[in-house]
Length: 462
Image (cartoon, rainbow, N blue to C red; front, side, top):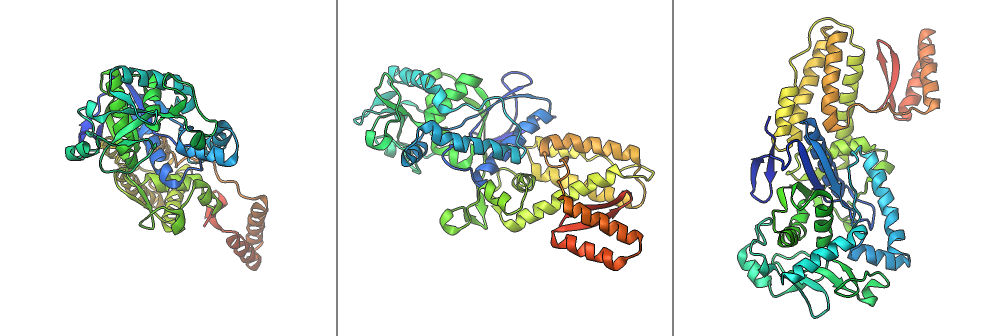
């Protein structure tokens, strides 16, 4: 089955053809480790995980790098504000990031390059660009990339050529900027003691540190080669970051940098841009503190197609909890199926077809839940036996290699609640229904329902 990707550069769906048969070289934009990542960041990271898992689902081997930006304007400001080293400042958020990835059941990747470990490679690239006279030293002593020397600049973001001409004489030293007209961008920022404190590296251009854009180009080429299959990030990375990556990489190495560009849309909160001032800003930890699980957050973030804006609400997160409960209850019913007959036709071909069509996870999920509804009806009629159930479970395990939300270790129930459940079971055996109802109500107050099954009573969260 052909896998089709929507390429941001060409703006059409293209059949995926890797550089090396059976192997996907994948570069995904990771965090700037200056604070805890927020759920908007994790919308992109969860999509990147679904992307990786889908490639593996279709039989590809994946070699992936996810960068960690540990030196830029934000990390330097944070370190100086706390009067600690850059490494001491960033390691706190680096540790938190990996804890969050684990909570969201995001697969580990092959490489997590940190920008400060690749300064030499960045300097080599900048030297090459200077030697080609594509880069130059500005009056402030920093090294800039001249966008007029790269004729195809703007092809990813589809900037108007008139805007390029207007902005060509301007220079931008900041790592991030929101401008509709492009400008020459910084490759190496000259050291400024007031701005940088004691954070700098020696280079042929003088003391300083790399610009943000050159970091990803150097790390991608060092780990995955000068041309890679797929590069992914959020739509906010298209310009200027990814546009600048293309320019400096292709000017330096003389070959195509990326074959397929994929970008995840924005996450909104209650239909508004997430902002601390609006009180709608959430980190993953904020949601865990509210009693939600990492898998519930993961499901909420993955269920909408990556090129569609996702509106995040706490009510939507409650709905994600309900959807996961449906999945887990279905597994439980299959594990205890004792009827006879045959299950409905397999949902797997349709599931695969949606996935192959630009990772249409929302379509794939609709097929899965239709199948669950139909199969539950057959279970109710006693038409699903152990053999059929075992086959369905094997299909679910296959699709869960992509979803990562179905087969989870059972949640730990506090011992005192298990004790209440057993007291309720005993009270019912003794026909002491008033006492049994008392135990049930106590469990309800703790947020648990009692489900009576053919194999006994069990607790599950409301």
